[in-house]
Structure formats: structure tokens, C-alpha cells
Image (cartoon, rainbow over all chains, first blue to last red; front, top):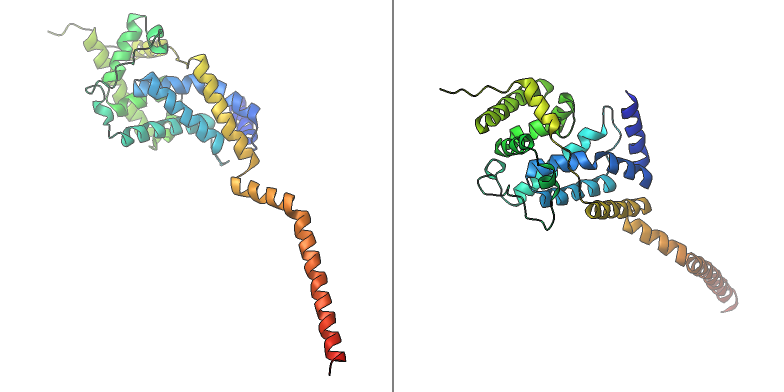
Length: 185
Length: 90
């Protein structure tokens, strides 16, 4: 186990005891990655904000029980993914058709939103477009690794598939993404 | 004829690495943190039922002790009266 994993285990131990400082450390370490993941997965900053709140409430109310092999990042991303899936299910939304339904249009905000402010460069805009056009399963596969920074084995755990199956899925998703990017250029 | 060059794995990795991290606006981040810390504090204090029970025991303990003591004394008195009655009365 490396130093980062040791440190996170310590945070989790403290959090189980109700320690606020441990929660704050986890919150600040993972907030941008989780928000980025949810933003790009849902395509809507307002939805991502609500879903992220749910992730933190679950962590505060029911931190993961200690067990062999448990690591914090995959647990957090699994919760984030589950709240997104529940959100879609509650609204009877098909994740693969969100683009057609215009759900992916970003809500106009009074000032520049986080996505708009950061998506200035054309390559980034092009990649954002391609990601939105990817099928939902492919999008989450790519995002878990790219935005979440998870290792393929960890991402496989988030999706509940075997690591070799995840690698195949990732390879297919990347090929589709590359094709979409090519077609946009 | 399609003249577009395919995007290589290296190129795709480069572009994905360029995707910026996003973050919540400061006010929203503060609200989320505060809401979660409230839940955490509630969990630390324990479930509502357990807290209610603890409060009841703490507040009513003297009264309960007095009631149990009084009941014990009353039972003893009644037992004595009954014994006396049986001994004295015809």
C-alpha cells in the first residue's frame, strides 16, 4: 500500500469516528475530480452540483465500512455514478438520447459558468462535443479514467466489471471518441 | 475520398489530458461542505431515538429513583400492615 492509500485509509478511519477535519480533507481532495466527472457525465453543471451534494451527504452519513482492498477514490466515483443513474431513472431519461433531447445544452448563467469559462480552446470544445455525442456507457468509461484519474482496475470496480472487460470497453470507447473527433475536424 | 488523418492514441491521450478540471463556484462549494458537516455532526451525536432515550434517562433519573424507592417503602409498609392485621385482628 503506498503513502497516498495509507493517508486515505487514515482519513476514512477518522471519518468513521465523525471527524470533521477528515471530511474536509476528503472534500477538498476530491471535489474538483468528482464535479468534473459529474459535469461531463450529465452535461449540466446545475445537475452535477445537485448530484455532487448527494455524494457528500452519503459520505458524511454512511462512510464506507472498512474492508480489504477498499480505496476511497473508486468508492466515491461509484457513489457519484449511482446517483447519476438514479437521477436518470427517476426522470425516465435514456442516457444515450440525452443529446437528442437537448438535455445537454448548458443552462445560461448570469456569469460565465465553469464549463463555458474553461472551454475556450477549440481543441477542448471539440473534445467536449465529441464526449457529449458518445454513448453514455462509453462516456462514463472514458471519463472515469480521464476525469476521475482512476486506474483501469479501479474504474472496472466502479462499473462492476472485470478489469479485462473494462480494458476492452475502454479501448472501444476511445476508438469511438477518436472517430467522432476525426469527423468533427 | 476521406483525407482526414485518424487520431492516434497518443494524440487522444494528449487531448484528454488537456481537458481542464472543473470546480464548483465558491459559494456552492461552501454550502455543500456545510450541509455535509451538519449530517456528520448528527451522525456523531447518534440516532435521534438513542439521543431521546439518553435525554429521558438523564433528566428523569432522580424521579425514577424516587418512584422506585417510594414504591419499595410503600410495599414494605403494606406488608407490615398486612402482617399486623393478621396478627392482631380476630
